[in-house]
Length: 124
Image (cartoon, rainbow, N blue to C red):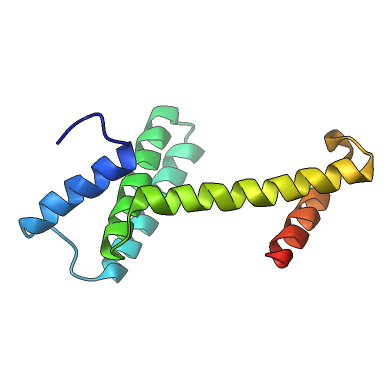
């Protein structure tokens, strides 16, 4: 396997190799359980202010999420690309609303910006 692959694709391919040898969770629920376990480990590292540990746990979360995509028979890179595009569309809509208001970004609270976000989301 080439190290030059995008990391999500590489993670998915590593897991495909492992699965082909029988090292795999037989049910998607077990993958979801593993994601929850990794999130708890991340939270523990984060609350202990263990930055390196939190980074490692975040990597584990992403790795297991790539495995979730494999179990769903979809490409993790494509799924993330679609999520990025959706976020960009919605954020552009929020930017338009801020611009039309005539106010600066810093004049809005996060709650007010989330109202814009939800308005844009409803239009989709």
